[in-house]
Amino acid sequence: MADKRIVTCAITGASHTPTMNNDIPMTVEDHVDQAVASNAAGAAVIHIHARDPNDGRPTADVGIFRDYCSGIKERSDAIISITTGGATGQSIEDRLRVIKELQPELATCNLGTMNYGLFQMIPKYEGRWKYDWEESFLESTRTEPFVNRFADIEYMLTELAAETGCRFEFEAYDIGHLYTLAYYADQGLVKPPIFMQFVMGTLGGIGPDIENVVAMKQAADRLFGKDIEWSILGGGRFQFDIVTAGATLGGHVRVGLEDGIYIRKGRLAESNQEQVEKIVRILDELSKEVATPAEARETLDLKGLDNVAF
Image 1: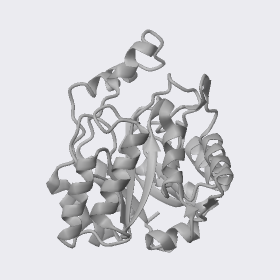
Image 2 (image 1 turned 45 degrees about the vertical axis):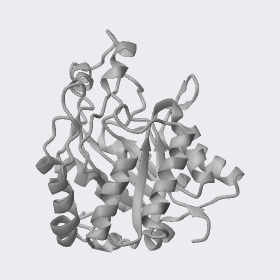
Image 3 (image 1 turned 90 degrees about the horizontal axis):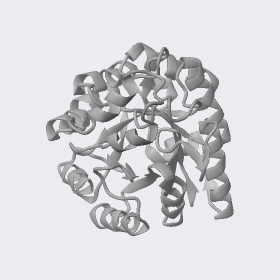
Image 4 (image 1 turned 30 degrees about the vertical axis):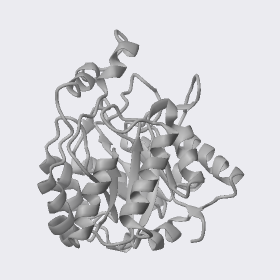
């Protein structure tokens, strides 16, 4: 798959609330429709969190995840990557239950406990909330860390991987996380190809600076050599700058309303598909081809849609 880029679309996550953008998908139908459209636009991988369809609150409900996954599978051949990060207030048991039951091809594995700040967005929307959970949810990130213990990571790499056959998209929010991953690779618990996602711009993680993209890539090259497939996402207004920089350095890319709710300065994105179409145009201008789901499966050594439990 010479010089082709895997595009991931993160359909919805806990980073943004319904108040921030009316087009954040909330119902199962919305999620499936936007996922299928994003796949048709060029996203080989669809990354999903789940929301309560009544008010958009983040949820770990396996039934909702199952409805998303089965709906997407019926209408596309997209690779579905299910979060294990979940949202503030969800236990690690809640977050991993969906992987045990649905056995996806791909799941995220976050590489360390950290502060994950969303509270700084509150002043912009003060007094305009659609639902009573939104402000308190964002505020909770001031006091509750994002928990990913070494024991949790080890469980995922051993028992969970053996039970489900899924592979992992390793989420690295800072350079230290790459060293954690290298440790487990040295222990033989992580086998190539190692798929990692550089997460840039989260308050509490590495900042969204081009110099930091270069630093993350240099560290990954030093630690893993040619055993990696790396991708990049940029939080908020830095989304397209950062992913474009990553693409020029040889990385795969991730966009979607989980990461940023704008399509350009001053204009909210109307759908996940719109963001995928934009990054595909950018990649085309850079003479970079976009990988199909089949090509991405081969590159990442995934088990295939016939072997999932949804």
